[in-house]
Image (cartoon, rainbow, N blue to C red; front, side):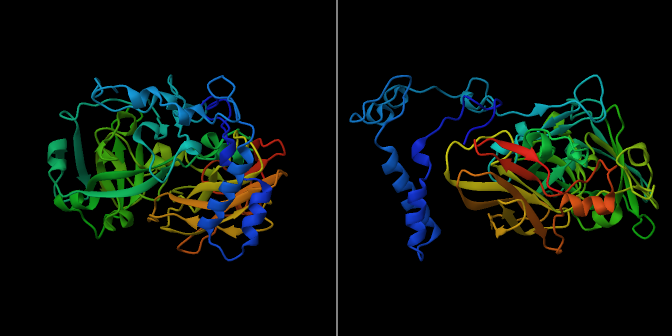
Length: 454
């Protein structure tokens, strides 16, 4: 499988990694053998079929009887002295992975700088997004703030107003938890029937990290929070947009909401809110206020500018959906996905991600015929609450057109809807919270494109 022009040149066809139809049929005929035997025997059959004419290696023809020079000849890295510790002191990816990066896109609220970058979901493994590939969404650009001068304040319905330095926050008992963060506008373009080409652009405002910090309830209790009358918290950021969001106290008293300073084992990156941000598991990313400087406890929602003007959807009856914070159950196949090309018929591993703001993913089903038939995929461990879950399923492509879909179900019983089901309730004027089933069309030439199945 190869990527489109974004990653072309990095992936080349390796004939020995693809199964022949005869190899597949032979293994399936054995019936009782397990999946591991199926893959082992099928790949052995494919390798035997590919052994006759050898490919080109490093631009030179390889004699059939000579074997692969990449095996027979010891490479430089086996016979020479390697490099020492990196001079810069902070590790970097291989130069051969230079094309793996976030991609910018216009749209949404704009400043003089680009406001959005999308994570390359098609090239990620497991469930954790590397900090350097984490998606970005800015409302007034990002800042690299001096932590020694940053202050976090608590006021409102508390016994005493408090101000914390970073050192004081980092002295308190901390927790570390894996959670996904998804922009409420993720997959927004598909609401408008705009078929952007790759999963990086359809679903790339999504990432998952291990966040470290202090539960917000711990800090509120130090200030003597009025839990009887204080039903909401206003979180305020320290950037130029003064991003402010209402957080229900019920989420905070559960202990899930974190005032975070750490991400993936190190301090937050500046573009992700350094030195302090709010982590609100299961809730749209705009509520994960970056450069967090203040929380205020109140008795009703605050209807801030980003709750009364933005992040609302017009419903068919003329009313607006407001305070729609929850990110509902959703999934997407990341490979094969739009912009990729299947190089030959045979065995492929279909893989993707599933998530839900309501808790753990319970099940993911995959279809290769546009939703007419479904097979249950394997959920790979760990399966965590309000975190990304990785799924995989075996597939043998026969070279004919196919429409690949995934459908997730969470532990509360909610099932990811089709576009037809979603639009029957939400109409056609929505922007946010599109969790409809994504479809990828595999054409006979192997090219994969974004299509929409109603």
